[in-house]
Length: 357
Ligand SMILES: *Cc1c(COP(=O)(O)O)cnc(C)c1O
Image 1 (cartoon, rainbow, N blue to C red):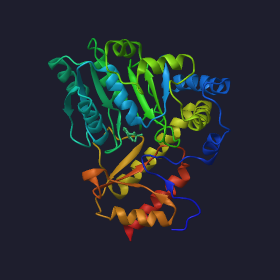
Image 2: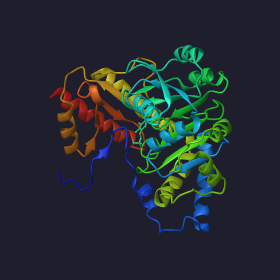
Image 3: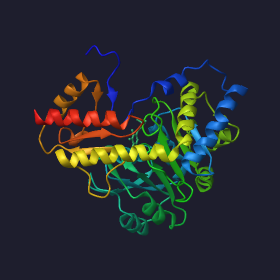
Image 4: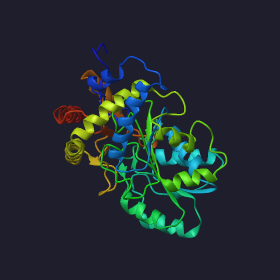
């Protein structure tokens, strides 16, 4: 295993980062209360709003995405929250709610299936909720739930805030944060944004901010009111991961230079992988809700996924085994980031070769 570099990542996060983006982070350090930081943060905040497609403030947190999942429910839930649970990450959001002492009801959906707007509608009719948590793209199963339809249901119920984990869908598919009236949309740096881990970005709507004012124990590090106040001045309440923000600036400029092209590449890698998966194996998630971010392949040939990854490693590549109980029963190929389609195709050819042997 004496590779010149670690294997190229085709796992659904962390995602492969191009050398020029890594380089962009290697800048001389600046003071986060000095003008150099304001010059860095101001355009980043503007670009984030463009990619989020909203005029709401979009904030930068020095934390992994889980930190903002926790902050979102601490700021937006007074008492009761409805958690849509259809995989490991949505399960985690439910656990975060209960560990923070919130009354959290589950809307359980079988793993591999999408959350349905009708089911959300029925649940919202039964009880009064402060908010709904939804994981747009379940990274554990490769399912992308119908966000626009679910948002329409949630936002037609007064007082209910919609909190969306878009960790593996943001910057993978366009998300209309404002049009869908999403109250909090959150993403982490190492997934769709294809940056090193360590940052999260999130939008906060006016109703979400109003709600935060009514919640007493919002905590300190994740206090939306303090963070949004800072954002308005291109500041963060605490010391941010400045190096990562340099890399974020570079990434956002790249995306906005050809946004349609950036999304098209993701769709191309997804289409290629799905077609390949149907030819050689099968696709795990229910038809019609396959993720653009990753393909969760059903291991219909009973290959050793662990063995496959050892073989791929020798060729300088890496994919992911299935998540939890789905280990060896499925494997996951990520399409996030900027892996060229030609190299992606090489990966698929290698997996086919391994499966034939
Ligand atoms: C990875 C992931 C998370 C957690 O992100 P961290 O950065 O590890 O905190 C949350 N939700 C989804 C959908 C993910 O894929």
